[in-house]
Image (cartoon, rainbow, N blue to C red; front, side, top):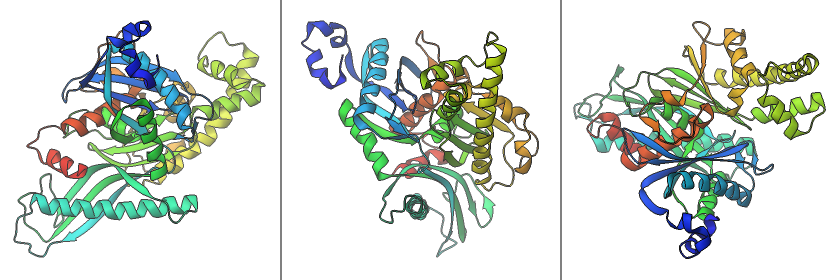
Length: 429
């Protein structure tokens, strides 16, 4: 059944099953468009208990994605259609609203600070004043992101657009506060996480939505979405961790400190680079090397094949590990969290988690001790349940996070009376 022909489904007896599916505003679709796979999740809209009712997955064609970004709009739309149809068949509903992830080295996610000196220190801070301060931070961060992308692409006229914003911290006259409204003071210091993407990448996602006849609710930077999955609806979470989403084409890293996303970094080494190295060292084609990689932990691999396989993986691990070190170093943090949480298809390769958990790579970075490494279990994602008979694993965490971002956008964040909820509404305006 083609999504492009939904109107035909209403009268064609050959697609009677699809014709019984109803378009519903009560459901939300998340599309995780990866280099290797597209994953689709359909969930019932709810702030506190998101129920997943449909799951779909389809293999991406070679050339559809380059370094985490869409390279072939028609090709990506076709694969998204395959994944979406599977999810719709399972859910027996058609969600019209969608949230989509975005990744790649040209996505710039940083924490920016601004010192705002108030003209009248004796006047209480208002919502309108905070809105003006936040817009100033976003504008400054946007100009910084544009300059970075312009330098990397050698295009001084490049356009970028704000994708995500999240409050990190607030200080008034040096005093940290959680609720600035009503406080008096001379100097307000705001730390705000912002993520920007080149307009060309965003336009490609919008075109895919047009092809699929879907209403785009939000675009989310993928490591930010993973963080939202881990944090759930707890707007006062104290979670501190380094989150790594190891996909087919990129590795996306985010640092979370006391529930606030401090920054995101991405580099273009993912699971596919391991597959290419295995194929080259063992004289296999890509498909055979990918199948062998998925059997990496099998005890039945012959000793000689195991030796060659381990050598190929070891060579690529060194390059990947260097990318991780450079990305984490770029956060310029004085004290990094002691927990590393992994997700994505690349994290299935046990050599990756073993390297992070046992190697000495962390010693040149500001860790207090060796970090604890673990895979993110979907059952540990707060405020979200899987109501299907399809078992989800760590490769679906990004899609689950996208659902959370979509719910944040549509229904708001947490208790509407809390300051973080109020600021969240300001950040979306």
